[in-house]
Image 1 (cartoon, rainbow over the protein chains, first blue to last red):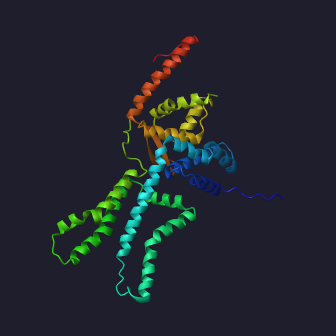
Image 2: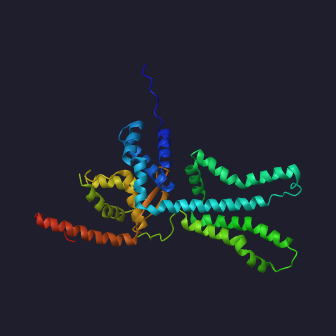
Image 3: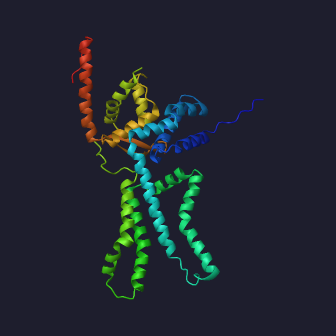
Length: 227
Length: 112
């Protein structure tokens, strides 16, 4: 008897998607668009009476080789890939900054001397390097593109990104600033305190946020009007 | 079959003309070109998108993700007002070439 394995169309598309994801020159939006095209082409062949396997292989051939696609896409806009890479780098710096500020809020009172002091010191250092460690694990597992896609889906619009960012900056950087003001022995008007500390608390992260928003790979800048 | 150079040169007016007729998406554009040319203009499916992205970067077209009838999201392209102006110029240029060749080959030219 013939022993034939059944063709799994979804698994085949998933494999193809992974091949595309391995192309550094293809942005998440490009990959999404190509996948839509592949699915449309498969549906077109199926309507003509071809089975799943034949439809998939023909559609895949029509769309083109992932490597070749990557090369062609980068030719269309060579700066796009670098713009996107710098965006992710700036975002990573911002997230690390948020993380470092957050862990400074961990109370270490009474844990600063002796064995427990040493242990808490090590634990604190480990916490500091945790984002870098997490990133290294994601890269090693080959999940970087997948994670970036997930994050890109959350922050899909520039306004949403800036709004979330400002809330985080005010919350994460502002709270320690206010606490420090109230703990300060010298009585000073809060306005002068905020103005004096503006750049150290809000200025730099805000600048990074605006830079990331500017580099963000979405539409919106100089968008032409529909004719 | 058309030569590679001619296919590349005609892609801009073809895309702008198709989009001037209404918004469309990659797969539909490819099908339309195949149908219009009787299979003579054969675009590689995946290579269409870099061209569309270039036109979008130049402000001649714009795009938006919308839900299709199938329920899946699909990226639709539409022509911009600048795109319409460029299409007008492209049309005149292509018809000039066409009419010159028509005169040479003694075929009835078309009005520009």
